[in-house]
Length: 514
Ligand code: SF4
Image (tube, rainbow, N blue to C red):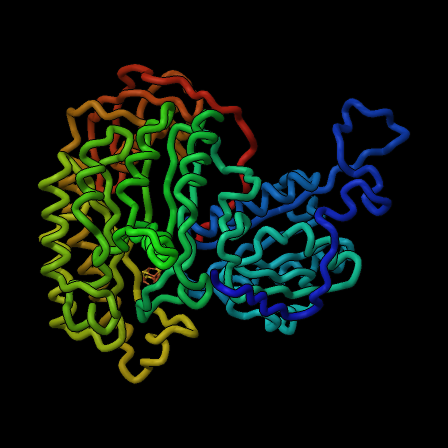
């Protein structure tokens, strides 16, 4: 078992779980005010939660929201109405620091107008910057990191009693449920779909990535706990689950290693395919996705499981990052462009009609025009359905950030980025156009943002379809006939409803794009 090392910065004192929930200072703030006598003057406390960054952060935010709601808070989209504002930060994306301190600068005005307002900074940037946050923004009440999300409400109470606090744990508590955000109460953004964390941390060392230093080593959640939670979600009406991990397809390697060390005769290999199959066979789950896998750890049994299990969607997110062997080696990715393409060909041989998406970084330190040409070649051959493309930007604390002598010329990078987008959009358009005339099942997300008379749904391939239809509730499954396509969406018409939603409807958590 990994030793607990909480690395607390600031006051280490603990307070009882949910202090003040029914105590004097709570003063009857929890309850259904519509059905209470006015003499009690019930006041609902409100929180405003902003999420920056990746799905892991979205998932952590669901847990923070769940903890706050278990403590009697209600969500609000208005900062002005909030008693607590939580900024769940990400240090992976560009300008994360500027965005955080810009937001904190604005919140200072709110705090001056309402000294009782509590401001919380959580997430990767908090894990990285620690007490620097309160040094730069003295009006922040609570800072906590990625390993102690479950302490959110306790820290708020502690800060109310004792003043500002920063609490960062160096690593998760192995073997304890709280290490996994999925094990905490949640308030999901949508009720028909859920994230399910199967693993936290990452054992790789990609030169551009801050994750290993802010999320720690890989720890897999016990197999049975994941399956039990997936069953519970299905019982609650969830129809789509995304299995989440930083290196999702290496799930279980640490569990097998621990079993071997304790004397069991087991092979030390990932258990991801077995887990995917088990979750995908749960009654009520119509779609099981996973993100993000690592190409170097991808094994044929995962593709075979995707091909065999109806609920395991035929969509593979397969991060390439670069097509140049030299740059892939500098990134420590553990594969070459050719090896990546071999694995992709194997996926396409095994899984009928699989959609493939990817991540690519342009302008990694030292990238030459030849390196970039290799990326274009691999991207063209891979013929992706879509890609998240990024211009390299150094993240403090990463190996790549220390390669300043080799940073690429920004104008060249801009030009390369545009050329890469042309290649990606060409294959995307071809892939999307290939769907014209087909009948695709979608899960309805709601009215289209641009035209509220049209509905938007998502196919198993994760493609958006805008389609004319009678009003349908989010979470409805329906078939649509695809009539037209662009490189990022399909147009269609309703054929028939295939399954009505089974979940209860709730108000979404506020979220901001990074
Ligand atoms: S596999 Fe690489 S990019 Fe992904 S989280 Fe781990 S270090 Fe970061």
